[in-house]
Image (cartoon, rainbow, N blue to C red; front, side):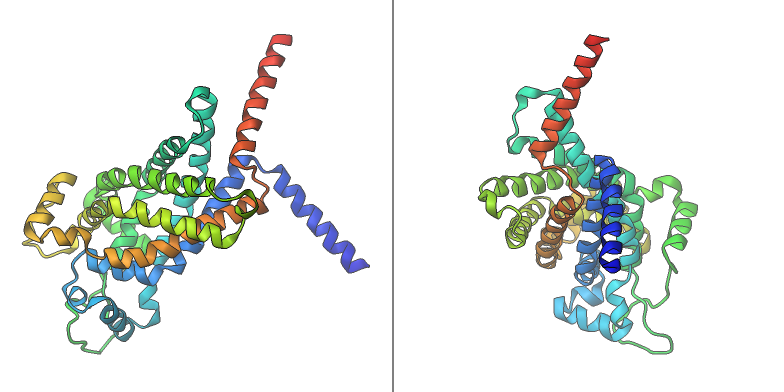
Length: 341
């Protein structure tokens, strides 16, 4: 009986904490957990994709499975997670901000423009602005993640054929931050941010658009089904990424430009870099790593949306319609109180 009583008290304690949390804090937590779990699940594919996008010749020539074998041989299992610390450090606040601001923008639009309706266009607009907001706040962490993942470090005292450079330029996240800032200043930490913004606006918007649109056609009794959410999330990520992938390649090459050979032409603007890649490397390079990205996007976005919905349910976050009704009701109560005053 005592054990059951303790469990009941602990349950009531956590219930009290959850109930006392503001809505935006619950959405931040749900988004952060979803982003961290999804990113870690696909970290090995993300590492190989970055090596493809940035034209590491020794990986570009051996293909997907050859790249996995080379990383395992030269760097071991942990090589698949090189840069993942920076990736998770970025994705947790990024995903938290992304999901939370999406919900906030969505409620704000409905509250400010009642006649706009609650169709897919609403999700497209709210998702786009949420993606842009999250990128601006977390971009330096994405830059660091890419630079760390770009490094190829062989084991000491072993000469591995085909590895161009075994010297580790950056020893970790803080070292990469400090060296980048010392050489290029704040501007260096935001190098490549323009294509990120150009890409994230349509991608984030389309991702939420497709996900919410597909869920609208799911019967109410199936909307909390994990497999249904996984399928909806997979298709949403796949379609959204396809339209915006070339800008992701441009961003990666701009981020690692200073690590490339000194005779490489300087990449200045987003469109200039896009044209330069198509002209000098071929238009196929703009889609380099896309097949790997498909393999990554399917589980990543699917896991992200599914975990987010599960966390929202656990934290008792109201559904979209319930949240809107709550905002409108609170606004109405405020107006009524001011009239009585």
